[in-house]
Length: 157
Image 1 (cartoon, rainbow, N blue to C red):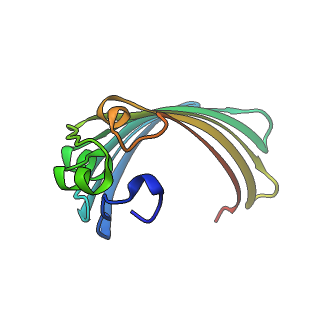
Image 2: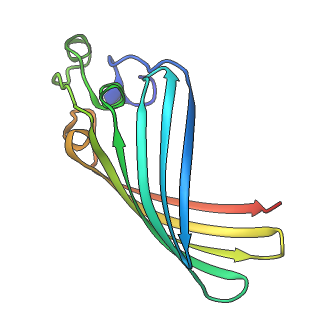
């Protein structure tokens, strides 16, 4: 609840560990994937994500990609991150809200990767996420559209 004024009175989510798995299928420049993550402790979240990413080779060192994904979450995750109990409502002033398991968000991103050497790379990515359903309807949420930007310098082993 110390992460933002809007969260005052909602309490904190306990520390947890996450275990997960991801499966991918690649067909030429298209990658399809599905992943699942289970949180042990804390929110006891079960989250599934599925998506696709297309990567085009511009030169032997420069690649551009576009991806789309969707995330679904169980009721425990939705309640922990988007729900407001009666006690939390009294402490925070937000209306009580009990979300259900559902499609939580969709994301779209574009990126560019440049291999400076065989091992060093630079990557830039911009994206837009949109909360959906109960996640978007939560009184905790200020903005349903969530832009993102990443700049990475990496070393490939």
